[in-house]
Length: 221
Image (cartoon, rainbow, N blue to C red):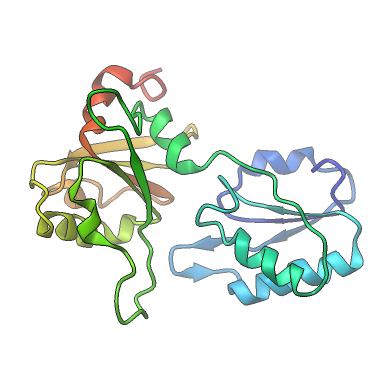
């Protein structure tokens, strides 16, 4: 990144990282916040492409991992179809990093051996949800990304498939930053308890949430 001629960055990228750029580097902000997008995805794709034609080293900077709900695959295909070479640099997905900072392991022996990562921001334009809700009847930890404004809906759907109203839930706002705040509740009350939290926020559903009482290392400092 220190060799980048252009950095095209998201809202979720830590702004301190941009300080590592060389003098004269061009910065292009393409962040998205809730329903407000600084530019649509199609325009982001074209912005990357046009800059790749003009500059030798273009960095597309994202928060977390570019291929976990990061649109990295779409952007890569767009470049491939236009004969632009690219490479992916793996990141640590917020689905794991944020719960860990909140003292919530996504797996724990004796509690759960697997976890699921689900978009909480599925397009409302779809005639039918692509989220397989019936598959979530198990004790897997479920992590919803970008779902704060649909928290009541998510809670209702999980109760409808048979999960207890008292099932543990945590909402982590601005995870891994100095402004991190975690609210813990149940499927019945979490949407009310977390309604004033700012985005970005991540939702963790599962018995592992209870371990936060013992493992809350970051916010307790």
